[in-house]
Amino acid sequence: MSSAAPAEPHVMSTYGRVPIALSHGKGARVWDIHGKRYLDALAGIAVNTLGHAHPKLVRALQDQIGKLIHTSNYYYNPATEELARMLVERSGMSNVFFCSTGLEANEAALKLARKFGHDKGIERPEIVVYEKAFHGRSIATLSATGNPKVQVGFGPLVEGFIRVPINDIEAIRRATAGNPNVVAVFFEAIQGEGGVNPMSTDYMQQVRALCDVNDWLLMIDEVQCGMGRTGKWFAHQWAGIAPDVMPLAKGLGSGVPIGAVVAGPKAAQIFQPGNHGTTFGGNPLSIRAGLETIRIMEEDGVLENAARIGQHLLSALTGQLMHMPGVKAVRGKGLMIGIELDRPCGVLVQRCADAGLLLSVTADSVIRMVPPLILSGAEADEIVAILVPQIKAFLAESA
Ligand SMILES: Cc1ncc(COP(=O)(O)O)c(C=O)c1O
Image 1 (cartoon, helix red, strand yellow):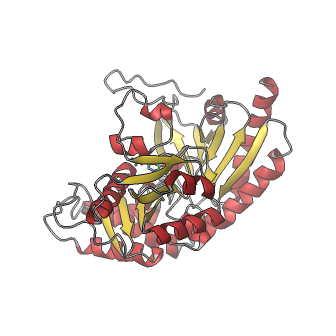
Image 2 (spheres, rainbow, N blue to C red; image 1 turned 120 degrees about the vertical axis):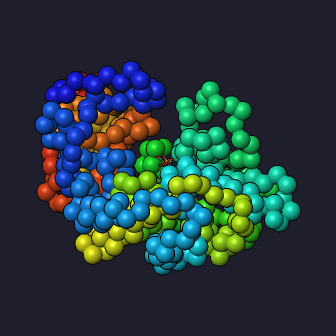
Image 3 (spheres, rainbow, N blue to C red; image 1 turned 90 degrees about the vertical axis):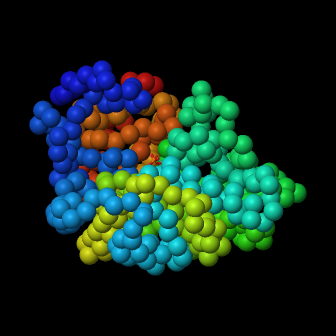
């Protein structure tokens, strides 16, 4: 290990940190305070779309900081409409509410669903959610989350959720049969924290149809898998459908905190003045970060890069790992890739870091990579060259 863990006696100990303190980055590389270099396949957990210190983003943010950082939603910011228009055009939806984080975007989605129900005279609206889902850590979003570890100690949970397994259309039909209180279905197009579990194209199309027939909102959490990560703007677009509500955050500001809820025509008019709001939502700095992220992604062909390099990485990892006993699956789309082992493998986080590669392990046994979308082919090859021997050694010693 090259770096000792810095002490944090005054910081609340909510995180199991890797004992590394990072000092700076460039592209897909970061350096720790001792000068050790890492390839960053975590990207701040699917946040640093453009990598670190992207020159165009740095220039734009420096310009913005010198003008206005924050003003409040008492006043107009013309750039807010511009970013909303960009998101609407790229999603085929109609209106946007801005906030700062993923859980806030999801909280707003849950409020939209409940008010959609109340407006129709449903007093106790219920929302379909999924096993292994992750939607955040506020009381409502942790209640929607399908992971008991996130919920324990925080009861009573928020009521009004019906939980079903992923990719099983009969299960959702059974769970909602004859229930007049259902108002929405809420899922991640690819579950991130739950272990990189994609919703199948068929399933997303079938749920879209089910929502249309029953007048439910289809709400797709694209906080982790959206904003170009899979090679399309939004992961559900691979299924050729559009949701009614789409929470975004993470990659939208390439590192500057920003979240958004994008609504289609069925949900765009639900919130009326006074129904929802947040102090930092859509502040000039975060909006500028969102605008420049999208502009730079288009100028530099970042979507195409995510699709091409992601496919290259997935094929290389599949080729080298799939025959190996102990490897259950190599899956994902674009630059959101999971390798599921048949045993817990959290130790690989530290071992890979020691070998110069940052990544995470989620759902105990899934090695997850969500690198910056500007990753090069050579860097993808380097990920494979570092990771595969680490997995082999781990499987051999823990067999
Ligand atoms: C799919 C999904 N939704 C919501 C969240 C919560 O986002 P935040 O941590 O910004 O509140 C996350 C975070 O990992 C996520 O992956």
